[in-house]
Image (cartoon, rainbow, N blue to C red):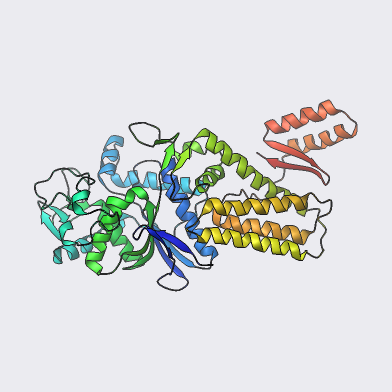
Amino acid sequence: MTLKVYNTLTRKKEEFVPIEPGKVKMYVCGPTVYNYIHIGNGRPVIFFDVVRRYLESQQYEVTYITNFTDVDDKMIRKAEEMAVSVPDLAETFIAAFLEDIQTLGVHDATLNPRVTDNIQEIIDFIAALVEKEFAYEAGGDVYYRTLKFADYGKLSKQNLEELQHGIRVEVDERKENPQDFVLWKAAKPGEIYWDSPWGQGRPGWHIECSAMVRKYLGETIDIHGGGQDLTFPHHECEIAQTEAVTGHPMANYWLHNAFLNIDNEKMSKSLGNGILIRDLVKQIKPQVFRFFMLSAHYRNPLNFSDESLKQAANALERIQNAYDNMKHRLATASATGEVEAGMTDKLQAISNQFVEKMNDDFNTPDAITAVFDLVAEANLYLQQERVNADALKLYMAQLEAFDATLGILTQQADELLDEEIEQLIVERTESRKTKNWARADEIRDLLTEKGIFLEDTPQGIRWRRK
């Protein structure tokens, strides 16, 4: 089964062939760290984490880079509002970002380079563009000469005349053409700056990623990703900058996730409908949000609502309960017993189905269908009076393998109940033996209030935390 991915550059699915066999170089544009991330930011964060996890499950060695933009106009304005320095602002929100994505079960990147740690590389990159006459200086600013790059617009599939209507730039008579974009911005009084051949200033937004991709991953990488809003102008400009200097493709595969809407409306500052991830996870389990994000194909728009979250929570609970039930039965399962060939054949077929769907442009909703097929088989097996430990381990191992890609299960270590709850469970058991049903029900309700849910099974009382 061959992995195929949809390449924004060619507008078609292509077989994934890495530059170096067995290795993948992957860059995903990270946040500008001037605020907490909202749920829309969560879609690329979660999706590209799953891409990276899946590639690793297929035995690829993945170098995964996602950057921090820790200086730009937004950061300067926010730092002024908060009466702090730009570096202090960056430290605050970088720490918050890492905390939030860890809550979502996102694995650490191989590296999170910062713009401010790569200023010299950025200056050198701009100097190379100036030398090749792809850039020019005007009043302390440096601009990219878009007309000189013949392929400008090839990612967004627009020509320069069409792009004039899409570029949101201020009218600047110093530019040779309105489409030209800034590479280096002259510092205004009181602003943070670095010395450069063109005077004191700071990098433009697009150039930073070109410089960091080349420094940390090389002239051509396998996968470059981000939200579809980055296709133009950010990624289009990256391509123009990088390929003008190197003469090679910047990336072989460009992947972009679609937008997340809220109650069928696009998130926007004017509507005030943005929801911070750190606020959301106070109301729902982070795994529910992650499952919700993976319930639609990444290239399709996804609508966030209370109802969609409820559906995600119910679906995930079915998977989690099956896993927890298998874990519980394992303690009392027979230690030996031959696993039926039919069972292993079914598990292999379900595993193949999961891989087939993930190989089809990371089709997570259909891959989740394979997870539910596994859960259905496991639940049928758990209905038997006697179960085989080796068989249970096969079911659990397969579900854990799926979860290594999806990251949706809560796999907590076994916990000891505190003394009060332990005594209540013992008392409830005795009450049931003496047919004191009222007291038994009262204790169950009390435990429920404490977040402890009991389940009476033929193998004894099973408990789980909310």
